[in-house]
Amino acid sequence: MLDAYFGAADVKPATLTRMQQARHHLESHFGDGFDMRALTLSKADEWRARLVEAGYAEATISRTVRYARQFATWAMKRGLIDANPFADLHAGSQSNQDRTVFVERATIDRVIAEAPSAEWRLLIALSRYCGLRVPSEAFALRWVDVDWNRQSLRIRSPKTEHHSGKGSRVVPIFPEVKAALLDVFEQAEEGSERVLSSFRVRYNPHTEFRRIIERAGIEPWPRTWHNLRASRQIELTSQFPLYTACSWLGNSAAIASQHYLRVTDADWQRAVGGAESGAHAAQNAAQHTTEPKGTKAHDSSEVLAGCGVAPSDAPECASVPSSEVGKRGLEPRTLRL
Image (cartoon, rainbow, N blue to C red; front, side, top):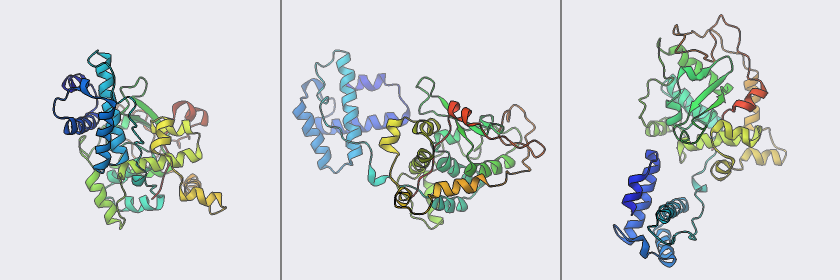
């Protein structure tokens, strides 16, 4: 039965891996090729209890139970089983609070300073200050996606492309990202297409990123890339309506609330009348930063058509009007350790 399910599954590789892990947990308990028709709610309860006894995290158990329920629902719709034994099984939360960290601006700026190249500095900034998914969204960024005049980036999202109208989104070129983007732009070869061209498309930057963090004298935090993105969503949600922050990050309000949004130290400081939040202080400083000059333009108008960094002899780029931001959507806000 599960062989038929997996044979028909049309999902992303990462999703398939998680589904296979759930299948492994089922077959480890019930046996390879087990008959789902023989399962009862009590047997399903016993299976879940074994996962708890084995010490798996609540988020892992929740995800595994949800996939088991999904497998059985698929079988029911095709008349292969009469009832779903996992239908009433408590799944629990898929959010693991112990692995959730807010990465402070001062922390990530130290890390960026230790990055070995302009592209590495931009990659980290895109994750922390634009909330891009790494590596998928960051590595898919092309120069034609950079609109210097509107100060925006078009983000292609492999994770959400199968949803209607969710294949891409538009985010602002936030002040914290602009200098790093300009540095890479100035170093780019004529006719280059990918912004982060030195990284192979299938390269996994996780291990090297942890080394960079350690070189900065910082203990690597859990879920290194995800927590950068989550930190940005927290910051943006404190400055803009939730739907705006979600539009820029490319997720939903429900997902943001469950997996991203947290109370930060800055929230407590503001509540008790403490210092201005780091996000607002940094934002105010960035708004008074002089616009970079002297950027060189590529000769290829096709490669850089509509790019958002203007050459030195061009007029300064106008900021995106608030009405357009609302229509097009931008990226998330920052978090901290």
